[in-house]
Length: 258
Image (cartoon, one colour):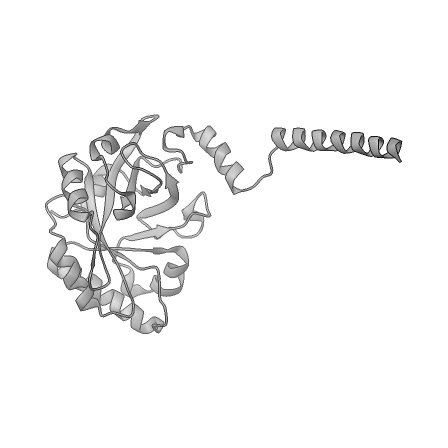
């Protein structure tokens, strides 16, 4: 019994040692290891994530969940000649919720020469009018501010047709009030099921999709792509969403309020 036990133990140790060597040397091919390889290959370790190649305009979006932000540090942060060129900032949600960091972020982003935009988180069971009234009471756009954004990522029990009508109403109200075509933010799945029709074609599209390394394989109808939610930027505690803009910086400026 003892000899067998010792022999078994020796074999076990040998197997564990071999498995450990293989695992460390050749980690499993999952999303994390793939992203790590891409990060090393593309060379943007300063942001802690892989960045899609072939795009020159990168940005973030923030809300009160990022806490107090040092915008001067955000603007100064670069990694291999890539920097943050724009930021979308949460202003409102539903009909009553005002982001308690909005005014601070809105002012300090501007003072730090960050191209800024504001967004509203849409609640489909509420009317478009009452939600837009909250947003316009908070957000005053200036020249070269990005267009207002409507963030639509839940439907709840609202019938699709009614939700689509309400979303369209908010976008129409925003364009009339601010004099610039608003942006529609949504997930790829939501876009495909609810917003790919002609009534939404005119609005710049901002798609959230983390499970692809090239959004163009799924759709070419987008202007902004939110590709990661785990980025790191100096001046911001914790993680932050990362985005790219499809185009050059002058194209981005062309979208802004004149």
